[in-house]
Image (cartoon, rainbow, N blue to C red; front, side, top):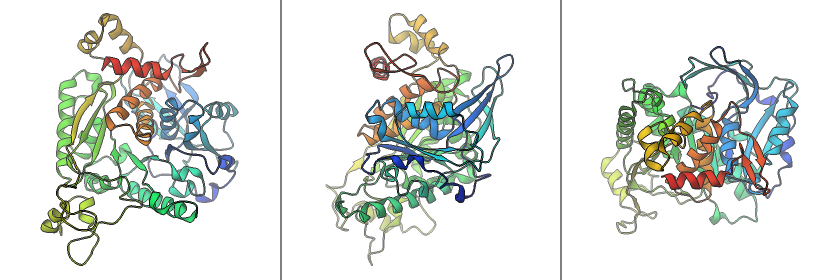
Length: 459
């Protein structure tokens, strides 16, 4: 699920980036909870006949992930949601008005020398959630440099959608630029620097068995890795094709996801890693292996771990096993504190987690019937509300990331994500922002906090 994959093709030259930075009006002291490096794309969606196509639909991973964060950020906190909107000469004024109405810290960049990034989406059948995608104009990929000299660089949570190797490059560059910018301000306390949450969404085209090693080497750099069930099971892990959520073979699909997570995390020693596997109508599976907890400040401004002997930086505690791994030093490093002293009692160990969090709109009659008295009616309502799954996964991750930025647990962040995704898939395109008779914000006529409360009670 989700909009266009952010694959590396037909990338516009950096010279076009600086043409008009209307978003430079973001106040320098604006606090940013969330930013995404996903792109803004104008979609054309073609459905199987007789349903007519729709055009000029705002889309892209950047748009939908920003939506997820924005759903839980009514004004004035809406300004803590940051994203970049690249506008070509063909950019419809109506979309500018729509984005402006969200009152986010959007960085508009208008470049009349190019067309806006556009994509074609085609569904293979009336009952399938799988679709084909292709770019119809050259895309404009975002980099860490696009956040430099803006408040967006200091966001508490950053959403990336890219290949494993590009994630490594982006994360390293982001953390370097972020720390440099923070320390360049003499009013900032160097000891107060913190590392952001990094939420990585692998692009589908790069979820293949030959990318598995690159994936494991990327996990130490991010806080959450979130492929969907097929990208993990059939893609990275190369397991036999598994039943999809829409096939109603939920037990087989769940078992395959759990096995894939167990195998992947078992290959990552001594550190705690978090996978959030998005599984459509089945919700998501959270898997975190036990191990030494990764502190938020480790990659940014924290103290470096000292190696065993000679003071060499102990890279082995942050990645997977390598052919030349010193196993004795590796296990000794587990028992050392930041100064290299043995401190067994003081080391915080993550016990791990394995948990399914069902979707807000689910399709299992038994679960629908068991949650309230009007089970059959509720089950039909739940199943019938899913109109178009485009963007659901990205919206999920935007809400998850902003929840983590605001101190929520990974379980609660998944709850936020499922609620946010429900708003994205109720219609073709984006949900409608409005105000109720009490002057409170609504999306599709519903208050987000009301839906969140209903969902939490059903769980």
